[in-house]
Length: 284
Image (cartoon, rainbow, N blue to C red; front, side, top):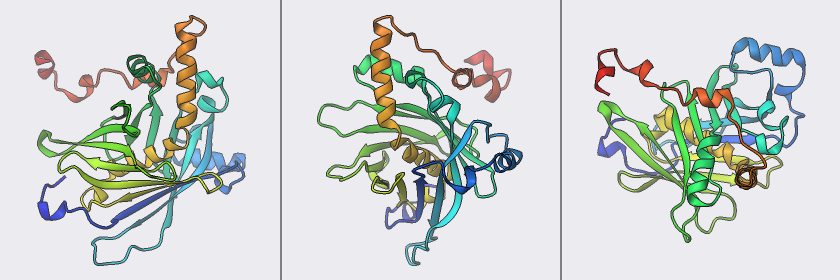
């Protein structure tokens, strides 16, 4: 990400992503065996247990002088039902994926159960953790809820890499005085509110709108995918917290031992085998 001051002035909304979740399964993309087979033929990421739960709309403007155009449908969202709706509530693991209109995979959000239990054990309250994988980056991004004190709002943290081994750190915090579950996205460098997430639960299924106000970050697809995934998680985090809280106490009493899905374990694999040269491995 270039660090030109004139390009980092936070101004109006440069890019919008709306994640509009359906209230029921009665929606066009998810109906019919042939339709599901068609999506699977487009991408192996469209698993057999996929259920389309919403649509993605977006709008972009190149500078603050032009008007933000109307939102266009650019993709859809799926939920892996076998990991969420088809198992016991204490065994649920949220996995959602984003696809383009043509069925191309865009990004995946995966709940990280072990991280949630470990963080909740330390803080003595249920905290949410998940990873984001996107087509724009080979890096796995961790987004974790953090405990900041009794008077603070809900807070999450993540970072993304920049050029020459630099990185950008962000905090997603609950907006004070908000009527809904709205969040501000704050960039550490400059402590600027670079984006805002508006939650509209008045809609039947829920609409979660990401407004990006930083012109550089608006062009960063990796950053955008993280916020898109986070906005979808908002709709499920109440159920996730309830599950963690109950499962945590069940585990402490020896009544139920949680287990990890093999796909979650695969995200914990040693990445250095893939990213470092053989001679570099001797120095780590």
